[in-house]
Image 1 (spheres, one colour):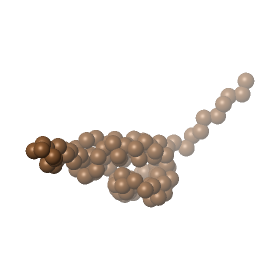
Image 2 (image 1 turned 90 degrees about the vertical axis):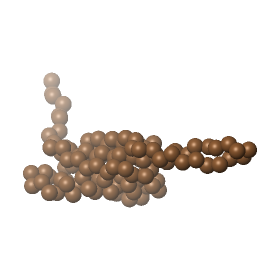
Image 3 (image 1 turned 120 degrees about the horizontal axis):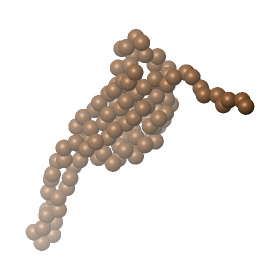
Amino acid sequence: MEIKARARFIRISPSKVRLVAREVSGKKVDEVLALLRFLPQRGARVLRKVVEAALANAEQRSQVDVDTLFIKGIQVDGGPVLKRFMPRAMGRVNRILKRSSHITVVLDERTGKVKTPRKQ
């Protein structure tokens, strides 16, 4: 059973969050929370909050075993961009883009069955 959590309009560039998201995708939730707690990137703090929200969503369902959850997917999309201008020399202007992100985390239960090789 899939459990989702979403954070929208987060004021951090999507490319910065994707760097952290690639590191944690496919791992168990408890490992991910421990890893995100000690990563120095700002995107790790934001992503940890979304993973904790997804875990809280999973705890609300009685049929989900929280110990078997893993990160099935993390999707980081671009949100609206704030466009600002900075004056430069000789009457010119540089445009500054302040990007935002939409982050979606999907958790799923890992089945307890382990494939064993067949003996011939």
